[in-house]
Amino acid sequence: MNTKRLQGFASQYAIYIVLVVLIIGITAYNPAFLSINSLRDVLIQSSTRTIIALGVAFILITAGTDLSAGRIVGFTAVIAASMLQKAEYAARFFPDLPQMNYIIPIVIAIFAGLLCGLVNGIIVAKLNVPPFIATLGTMVAVYGVNSLYFDMEPNNSQPIGGLRLDFTNLGTGAIGEGKYSLPYIVLIAIFVAFVVWVIFNKTKLGKNMYAIGGNIQAAKVSGINVAKYLIYIYAIAGALYGLAGVLEAARTGGATNNYGNMYELDAIAACVVGGVSTTGGIGTVPGVVVGVLIFTIINYGLTFIGISPYWQLIIKGLIIVAAVAFDMRKYAAKK
Image 1 (cartoon, rainbow, N blue to C red):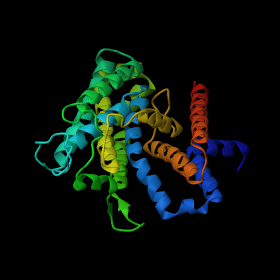
Image 2: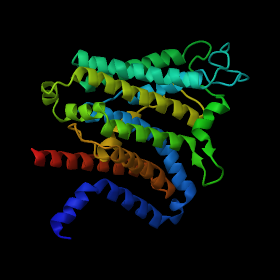
Image 3: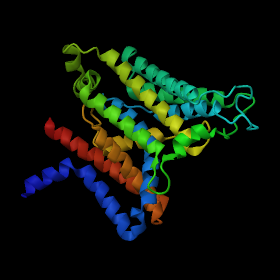
Image 4: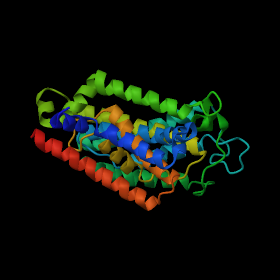
């Protein structure tokens, strides 16, 4: 293989090479990292982050950004948790709320996330506010609404606990038993990734999403209703954040108004590292998933081998900067 072909291969599969190198390096230091339990923990920790990152990918591909993702995750986690406490739990958020099928609060929480995304889409598409500013405003407002809800009587800003087992089972349960069991939360994340892949690659919405991100003016000239599709895309992203919030509450067995803080930055970083272009029009579901896995392995793997969290931050920062620099070089080369 000549040098040019080798460079082309490295360029095309750089993200996967980084993932393999990380796994090999950590395993060489401590072979126990390749145990079934460790890999299972990595997948569980990656699950909700993957769903959030897939929502953010919708926005980034349209050449936008979404700073409200983390706060929407926290808001929907609190909504779901507040309605799914055990009847005998002493500090119930709604003392007189009857025990209902757990699907109902889940749907309500996801719908709340969808509404938040819808607001983002309307602000961006109809009011022509830049996505950075629009979602920054929504981020602050959603946190305020969540905090007011969380501070309602009789809860008074106390952490919400005592969640029902049928709900927490979504985050901690699995098909089968032992180390070879398949966690429900991982299966849900895989299913969501498949659905998003279908939307990206097999639907009119996906085709128009890439067109808008590639060249919004050309998309308008070709007859695409850009405003309508942007609203759809932001609403779908909001629904994904809502689902992630529900699963995060189920996984941890509780919720506070600070859940999801800064999750949007991790999601954006995972997307960028996974090949979603900061200039829009480029991005794949496998790339996003691998980007999430890379950062999860950095957090989990380096902690596993005893590396300081401060070094982890430095490594993450260097990877993000390198990924964006690499992306911008490719964009400049195309121009």
